[in-house]
Length: 360
Image 1 (tube, rainbow, N blue to C red):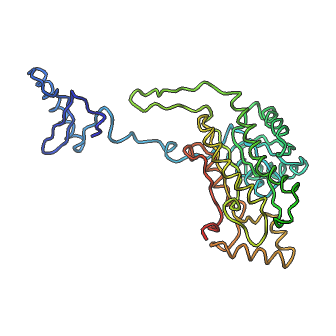
Image 2: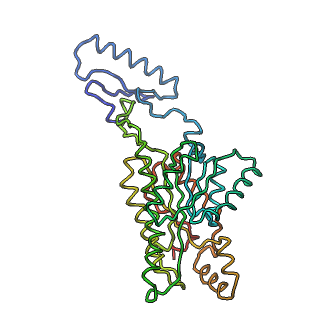
Image 3: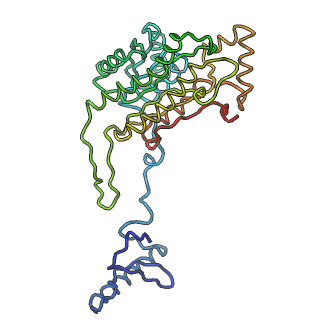
């Protein structure tokens, strides 16, 4: 029995068959009170006999049988708008198909909007061929390394999505350069860091500012008088997923890429910092750190020359699973982190999906 459920006016009695809680007053001398408790105890014993020896108290020992919806989380994203940066990339393309399949509206973002025309067309064809519920898809040009452009983008998105404020983010924008550290031009290193790291901060800042500008009053006390008080968050559905990299945890070989490595290490810690700062608003911030991905562009590069084939061999020889990842193998991680039902207690996490690379 939970000690917190006792009071000085209760006691426990036990017979040969059952353990029973009774309301008999401790030290009571009043015979009528004692008699009343005796009758109550007798009734409880009879109830126990009809319930396999168990007596149901004011607070049930066994919770009510839950519905499937309360146990198996849904990954549906109906009614939400997800901003997908780096939208023309191979990973973003595949992840966007999964978002559409789960009912999310999508705002595709890239440096040049013309790059997104093919992606948007193929997404619409994907929806049509698979007989999915139509969703709104918009395309946007934005340089994520420019904070003003990012702010303007985020402000404009609701106008194309029925006034819905975007509260989901899949941030894939970024690029890598293989330049030895002693030869790295300062301007190029700074630009890479600004796109990969500062762009991650800018998009999260802009989305959070917009959410906070439309915030609703929250409740601070639970409706259930006997339960622990819970401060309900403003935005329990808000979830930002940033694409980090295993390069933020290890040093890749044989290619030198110091600026990319330090930028992705920064993204991982950015996620942790924002998660702590914004948990009070119910906004969850997490990262997915991929290993080597066989996107169409990567496949083209590594198959174009003997050097590319040798590079692939060098990479996969260090992966316990012995291969590169397919873009679709990141869908599960993304949907888990975006889903409130699946990951409501997950924030500040860096989910590494690398085939075991970082284990060695």
